[in-house]
Image (cartoon, rainbow, N blue to C red; front, side, top):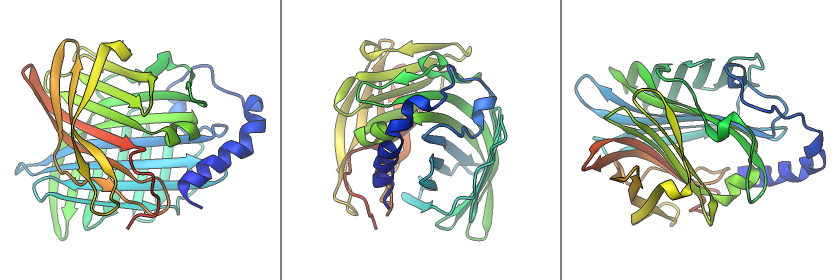
Length: 325
């Protein structure tokens, strides 16, 4: 069963039980870092930017998805900026999650992740790249929607929080050569009735500016009412960005030679009366996976008159196909 069909199946199967599920009124940390047994869909999601001592640049993502009673899967990708290369993998053979409160622990073949309360460990092997990282939070968690349940206009609901600019260090081994790497990572934790959100599709931006600001922006495709963002200052205070507080303008597009799907490929982003340009560091960062929705997610540069930075961008819903390469 494809991940898309699995999501729809879960929605149908549990619709009659929706009102019987006990929902947490607000996010409580570190407890909700751990597996929440009564939520239909949930994920633990890291993206990051790494640099070797010699200055070589890499991006990465590690994403664990749990769909209650149907699928457990992990997706991993590495972007090699200087070689203009992108590798990824997907695995459904996920060991049952650790249900202990305050923490998480997952394993699937050569991919393992553990942690909680802002101290995480990531290990993965994909396409000849072996990544071994330790992550440490440096800011307080960003609680989206006031740490409360948010009901989507198109159906379903979410609880959502982030840990931005996590200090990251470890090794990246390419072939037989190991490199020390340092950088920052962005952790997103989301859970709830998310099937319709996944099918709706979105643009999502995790922007880290050199002046210490961390900016999260997203909009759902075809639904301006769900446009939302946040901006966390260098002093670790967070303000909500509503639909009228920011603008995302698509500047160009890219068509995948693998799937034929077309994605936005550069953007003009405006918030707090400042404008930045976001551009992919590698054009082809599409995950043309076999058994779940195909999407683009990749490392990007950020430039503007007020400074520069780095970003990760996720584009879901632009490729209706499943069953990639």
